[in-house]
Length: 274
Image 1 (cartoon, rainbow, N blue to C red):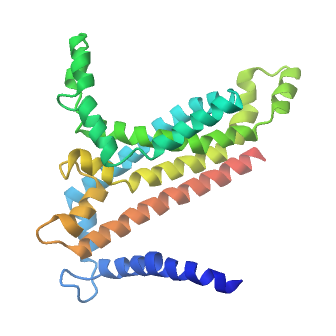
Image 2 (tube, rainbow, N blue to C red; image 1 turned 90 degrees about the horizontal axis):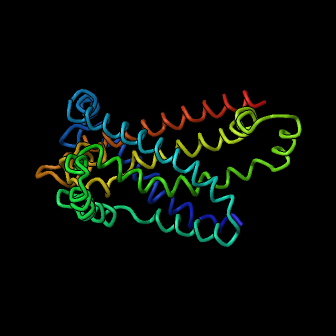
Image 3 (cartoon, rainbow, N blue to C red; image 1 turned 45 degrees about the horizontal axis):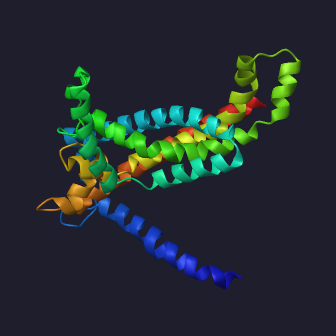
């Protein structure tokens, strides 16, 4: 039985543990790849370019995750009210949309909402003045792309959570005179909260690690931490693998921090529920 796990262990060591270990070791080396130093972390945490990249990544991740969660709450609850056939079709569409990301998504948005996008030109001809001021290649545009591919994932993750609320609870609350608002305030939301917090943390981690969509849309002109890491590793004339590794470790720490905060909130919500 244990021998069946050997291929899995080899794969995990070869493609997960060893690369991460090498990245961490490289982050403590100087530009020549020799000696032990904290200079790479000092540069990453004091240089305005990288600090701005961290800020942009965190802000976009939080904003897109919050927007995706709000949309997913209403959509997922609506899906539970349909028949089984329609429900399966809607979930299949949502599952397909989760794979529409990266270069295809960026290209589609360029065609629709770029500087000469078809949708923006149509809105301008219809007299919508705000269409002319929209900039797809700004933080607002990048956030919209993130919301687009985060929302289907949020729907798939939030949808099963609603089945944790039993119909009998609603009926019992109604018989006791509780309004719909009171049911969701004292029963529904506390039951949903742990699952929603877990979904929210996954969305933040997903957005923090995203690279292809933003890079395909803006190249290196928009400052995100993943884009800066890629530029240091492969995009510059003189790559700096050590600094890129340090920034990757910082990104991993930010993700771990978000997961730790989520775990603390989960424990708080469970204690409050009990």
